[in-house]
Amino acid sequence: MTLSLTVLAEQHVPVGLEGRYRVGCSAEDSTLRTYCNRLRRLSRHLAVETISELKTALPRIREQPPKHLKPATVEGMLSGSKSLLKAARLKFYREKGYDIENPFEDFYVKPAKIQPFDLFPRAKGNAIAREAEEQLKESDEPVYRALLLLRNAGLRAKEAAHLKWCNITAEDGLLHICQDSKSTWKPKKGRERFVPMHEEALNELLSLRKPTETDDDGSVLCAPD
Image (cartoon, rainbow, N blue to C red; front, side):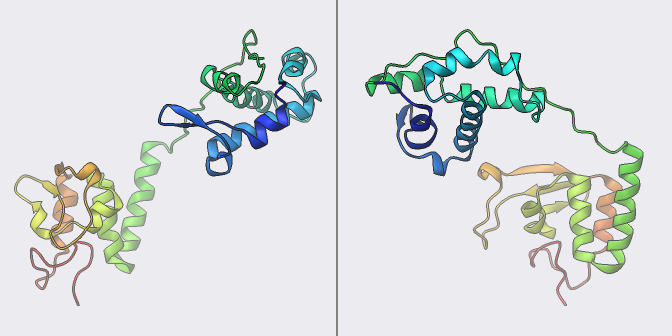
């Protein structure tokens, strides 16, 4: 049997499942849907309908690239399409009775270039954070407390939300990230850990503590009325 690109991209897409492959799950897999869309676009640009035709037509995508597409977009189409035709998936189709060869076997696909993330210069980033802290301290103290924990101890949002005063060791400057017996929340992978916090920021956090806030009473972020 000849395997058409329509069948490959729309009806019988094999999805990895415990080392095996099954059919008809592309709508549940966003990555696979992306690959399918790229294969559809590639076949449309090359005006082909079968795998054998695709193998013959592939060189044209470089010789006569679509003028309305950037080179990176073309390479993305090729890379995604190639991912649908890996060795294990080709084996799956052969077992189903399809006569299929890998059209990308002798065709080089350029690896995608990963662009570095352009961060703020450190001085500018610190200035923005300080300005935000000053505004929040006056307008929204719980969020200000959270910002202190996130920025100066690197806590995750839920870790900060479940931190209690009894979890803070001021003498050592450590925060104990652990499960609360009154909550179903658990740290990542269920592992307790101790996290250091910048001394100046920890002192600022401790200065915000009100007399009504007990060691085991609610979250560090939410002071009782």
